[in-house]
Image (cartoon, rainbow, N blue to C red; front, side, top):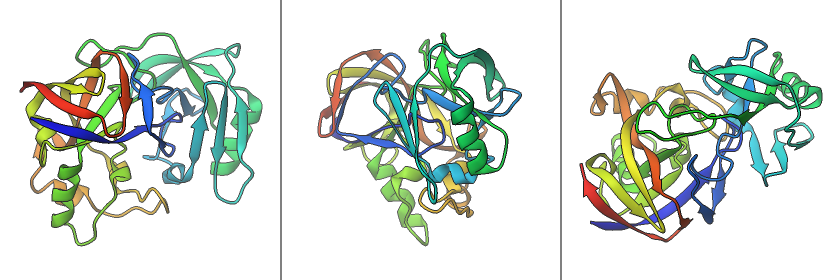
Length: 260
């Protein structure tokens, strides 16, 4: 079974908007710079759209040296990434890792924007995936999230108003496997890379947050719960780990190497 890559998205700031890519070199930690930065509370716990829906309005971009973050009604943050700040112990969903504090200026920009004390950290160290023997930066549990365009198309036939793919924040969007075809694959060749589909993705309240307005509703979780509730949660998309690194480009062919 074959298909194509239709989207590539990286998220340099965890819970900020995505950066759409035409091509990228897949790394062991996913697409370049994915979730390299994160906002934390003074106690080191991650801050995300779960608590701050307004993070959906952030538009970060990162070139490996300078992180630029645009936000409504304020001047952008232009921040040269620091590797000599204090190394802090931080947690992502109660799992410990480390981040390099990015200084008072960046912390003040975000704190003023959201009206709450927070700091910006940059990933450092090693963090294993929950399963599958991979590694990642500040992503929830896996370096890649794969969703079929047909899965969203099927969901949208069940909704009163269709939703865009950005509600689900995928790394790689594919086409050609049919609705929920990603569920039935173990090994997938994507362009010049091979990825292993490790675990279906349980969805949270972020999917109910409009990524253009930060407004919250009840969909798509209400509808998904009626037909995609399994393994202890509402599932949509599949978490994956790179097995063979290589170049990815929108339009690349995909091929199922091993079904589930």
